[in-house]
Length: 580
Image (tube, rainbow, N blue to C red; front, side, top):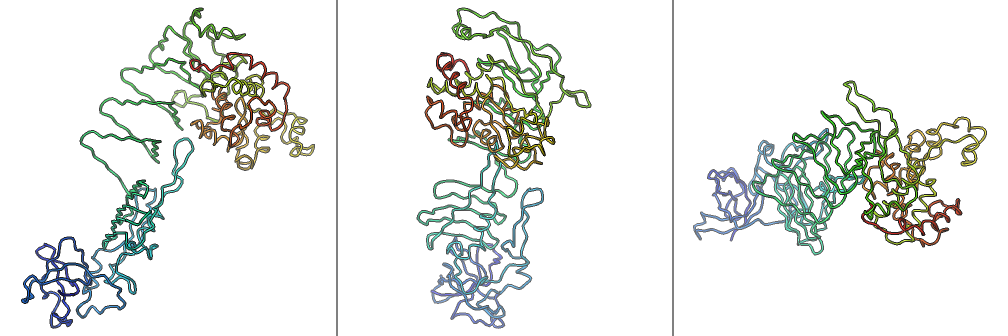
């Protein structure tokens, strides 16, 4: 058995041999025995050695001692700067160190966020790189971690990654918590790392590239892949992806999909799509749409451009509501034998026929004459009749699958009172001077009221500034996030909460909250999840429910009357999953 120091690994045969200066057999004097004249030693497969490493081995030829074989590397705690002019040291010259592998000095994200830039050190360190500490990897020892790739993993973890519907998520940080001697680490000269960590309670598998690209499996099985440049995956046959939970994809730039055959999408719930610009659909052989319910489009003015008249089926009407266009098929007389029509006809004022739209201004045009949508925050808010509003509210209760008659009656009654029998969908702020001083006596006096009277936007920005998640008066949040809905949501924080719960973007499109169907859904949501926790009181208690909605008991008599009428109305109190 022998011990020595490896001085050269550039094997001309490229079979993994190294030249070792063996203690007791070779002199340290290089002028007597230069490195290049040392015998070549074979290495046991898997042994990784660097110049300057202490190794041990045996002679394959026994007493002849001419055919050494390296069995392994001997770790230690070097405490002296070695003199490369003598043997038993790392003999590489400064020029050789400048071309040798080395750990990056730093990593930085490129301008524009595409990829990373690697700043290299001027040269590799001479072995040993560190004095007065073990030559075993710092990662294996859990010492000096701030100077290892573990710290890079922590520093480059992305925060607040944007997800659809105003949500964010953080990239999980590495749960590294190694305890020696359980972490098995392979760390290369250029900075690549492989960890198989058996630390009890902190078991991990981690593969790290010197660019910062890595993949890591956590103790609980969570897997994180972080790629610091382009990523490609090529599959030459089928591929199946199953996600037993939410699947989120965020692309900071374009998201492109191409299928050589059909694109089949099956959704168990609703489809919510939002575009900040134009939404374009092209089909060379036509577009077909089928639903067993109504075709409903809510929002901005709509333009239909085509080479012919749109075909309307015999079962009309087809209605694009709450916008600048209503397309109506020939009215179909209600069938008295249809139970659904019989039920609807029970409501006083119910209209089973079709309606023509009111005259509306045409949409604005681009320089090319193509109709373009209006700004989202200036979209016209529709007006509806009390009967239409009642229908909308009942459908919302059915969509929410609320079956308790008392709960349905209370939500319906409170929404009816708050919206003046479903006719008021937004907060107008059309106050006189006396109205302002009466409503906000602490904000408006005879000295300042003239600056705000009959200026709705200015009033809203003033009274709602720096409240409910809004910015200051100049931000315009007060007007943008003013009250909307049958039970009006007010303030940015409530719009954010509603966006998350209903999976609809009210932050960028707040007027959507004033569309009748959505206004009804928001009224239901307000009782279920609004005001941070939702209503937790007794639905039969009109005073408690009124305080939850109003903050006091204003309008209690009218609310009570509406509640009693609602309880007596079968259409209000009975869940009908066919009427949604």
